[in-house]
Length: 599
Image (cartoon, rainbow, N blue to C red; front, side, top):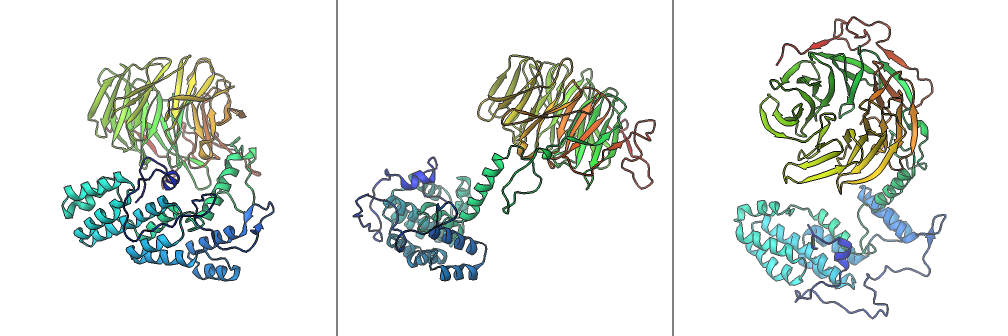
C-alpha cells in the first residue's frame, strides 16, 4: 500500500509542498497555525520545563528514550510490561487522541479514523492527505473483498480522488475496476504490483511511516537503532570475520587471528597437480580437479574436517575445472578439450556425458534454475544444454581460448565471458545488451562475487582488479604482491560479507587482501609448488582451501590454541592415491566412482 508517487521517497513525499489542492470530504477542516516559525510538525507532547536528558553524553532525550522502549515492549508482546512502564514513568506512548485513532484503524471504522486524524493536531495538510489516502485505500479494498463493488467505486470517486494525492495510483485503481470483472479485480491489482490483501496492522505500520515520529513512534525503532550501532561497529572492524553474531554486551572487535592462516589439513589423495577447487554453495563439500585425470569430492564433517567422499574417474584427459549445481546435489567436471560429465554427489554416479564429435569442451557452468548448463568449446562456440544432453542453443563467441572462464549471472540472463585477450563481455541474453570490461593487460582468469555485483579479474602483470558490474562496469580496486609468470592463477572472494580477497601465486604462497582497502594482510606459506586456485568456504568464513602443483590441497583455518595439522593421504595410500582415512561405506573400503559406463 502507499499514498505517494512511486518515484519519490516517502520522506520527501510526506513533506512536499506541491501536493495539489482539491476539494476535500466534509470531515476535513485544517486549522491554520499561528506559530511565527511556521512549523509544520505536530504539536509536541506536554512536558514540564527543560527536557530531561539521559546517558553519559547527555544527548538522549529521556521522553523519547522511554517511549521507544515502551513501543518495543508492546511490539515484543509484553503488554503488561509496556503498560507498567507507561504508568511508572508517567510518559505515555501515545496521547488519547492517537490511541483512539489506532483503535479505529484496527476496528475498520474508516470514516471515524479520518475524522480523528484531523483532530490529532497535524499542521501539515500534505501529511494528513497522505495518511487519509492510506486509510481510504484500505477501506476501498475491504469493500471489494466484501463484494461491495458499488461502495468501493463510491469511495474511490468521492473520497480518494478528491484528496488530489497519488494520481497515478488512483488511475491504476480506476482502470482496473473498469477493465476487470468482479472476479478478476484482485488478480488485476496483483498484476499492477498492488497488494490488496494488506492487513490493518500493516496499515498502521504504513501510517507510522507517514505521520511524524513524535505522534506515532515508528515500528521496530529500537531494533533499528541497535542494528545501526552494530553495523557501524562491524564496518569499523578491519579484520571482521566472525562466525558468531555480534554481541550487545560488548563493543565488537575482531583480531587478525580471525583470518584463516593456519594449515589445519593437507589433503594428499591426488597423484598429480591440483588445478582447480571449489566449495559447494552450502559449504558442506569441496570438489577438486587434477592433472591426474580425476576429480574428487570431499565432505566437511561436523568438526570441520574434510573427508574424501568420492573419487570421480572417467575422463581421458586432465580435469581442468568443476562446477556445483545450485542445490549442490550434482557436480560438473570438464576435461581439457574433452567432455563434460555430470555426477550425482550422493552416490558418485556419472549421470550424463556431454560431447560434440570432433570438438572439445574447455569450460562449464550451471544456470541458476539447475535445469540447464552452459559450455565453452574449443571452436569458440558457447552451447546451452538441458540435463539430458539436448542442445538448446549455440552461438559463436569471440573468446580467447587461453582464458576459458565464463560465468552465468544470478538471474540467468547475464553471461560473462572473454571477448579477446584483454576484454571481458557482459552479455544480457534477454535485452541483447553488451557491455565491455577493457583491461590494459592480458586477462588470465576472473570470478564473480556472491551477490553478482562485482567481478575479480586476474591479469598477466601480477595485478588483480575489482570491477563493479552492477553500476558500470567501474574499476573500484586493485590488489598486488602475488607472483604470476607462466600459469593460470585463480583468486576468489571470501570471508564474512566477502570482505577479503584471496589468490594463489607461483611462489607457492596464498595471498589475502582486505577487499575495501586493497591492503595485503596475510601470506600463507606451506605449499612446495605453484598455488593454482583458492576457494573460501561460503558457510564458514574461517575455512579457506588452496590447490597446488605439489599434488596437495591445504585447508586453512583461524588460529586456535591446541589445534594440530592433519594430513589426509600422507601415510597409507592405495595404488590410486586414495587414503584409507577417507569416507568409508559400511565395508570399510573407499568408494571410487568410475564414469566410463554411464552416458
